[in-house]
Length: 503
Ligand code: PA5
Image 1: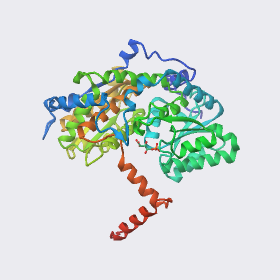
Image 2: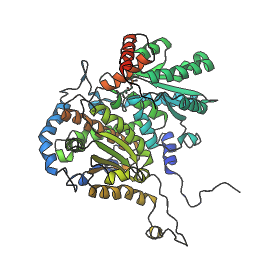
Image 3: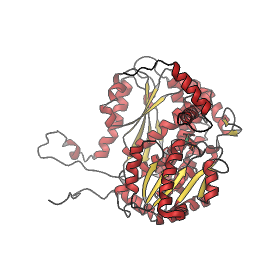
Image 4: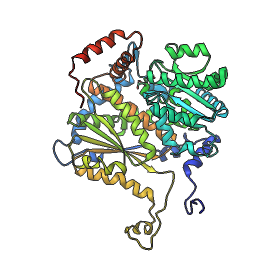
């Protein structure tokens, strides 16, 4: 029997686009038409007046407007509880207009050069030094990118991520994907001391040096603080090509810095278009008309939901490609809002899949949920639903109406949005016109700004993460890191007092 031929199925447009980008095709992102066709819309219709107890009223939001407008101005003026040590951590706010084309071109040049020398690129990092890169890469690339031919990837190497966990089996499996290939890496860590990244780097660096000696140094990029930290020291010693993470931009706000840009350029993602998306949303987000400013409305709704006792925000999307973007949000919001007993728990979900699982809970469980939909309007590909002679599933009405899979997939959000609203779950939809770098850039900026406003409303600094530091310190003590002996003794003393129950 011959292998399957994709009869009557069109060419994969995701692949086509990646090839075009790989050949240097320029996006018309500055044109009015392009901007109009790529408008991100926030639809909060189903937030208000849900049936059941304590609905959010439009008036609740309107009452918050003076407070929100004050926060909006404070953010613009760089005021308030926004410092990490002496540094105001709002460098991301004007980054879209500060980033210069020359810098983007330099990154593209480095990426192209390294790309030509390697088969596989590995991005090493965790948290903000990882999630934005993976989310953007997966949102804009073929879902089985590494299984495509190099030509189908537009000339890009295979792309893998390590350092985001300490699972030796996952690590070993990834190594199998690298074996026999020429490998290039970017090790990303602002602090330069994060254990997971450092261990992953040490193993890969060791392997690369054992294979290629000093020539390995040319295949290693490092992205870290401009002057300080262990990784910067190593860069100085080894002469690795390096990139910088600005002092005043925290990890989860850093996807438009070199942290994100280098990896994205390696995958043939158009970083100029990406930056333009950030710029465009920055302009929109500076507006003083509350109801025309999605960053303010988004922040207000989430704050009102939290004040009315909501505890969980389901972030549901109908696009496999956007699920990692929901995971990026899962970091941005809880790491920024989860202080002093505040904040919503985020639950990234892919619909339809989760509608057949925790969808039951959303519809009829405890009413402590709000829901945000990331609705992808136009998919890259249209897949026709064939006519069936037997019509046993009763679905012939779809091909008769000339409806494709994408039509049904939109209803995978529109249906639950209505049903969940009726079930007492306030929900809003962020409409994302299509998968492109411009829309991702716009989306990230919108969310970064919303969470910054949220910090002002909650009354705490959203740009620090002492809770994350606490786990890092405990882990250092438990792995017997020199300098953490006292913490190790404290932990032991506390554990000795606990009644250990093992069943
Ligand atoms: O948002 C943050 O600041 C964190 O998630 C960091 O990005 C994460 O802890 C990784 O830190 P580093 O880049 O210092 O290794």
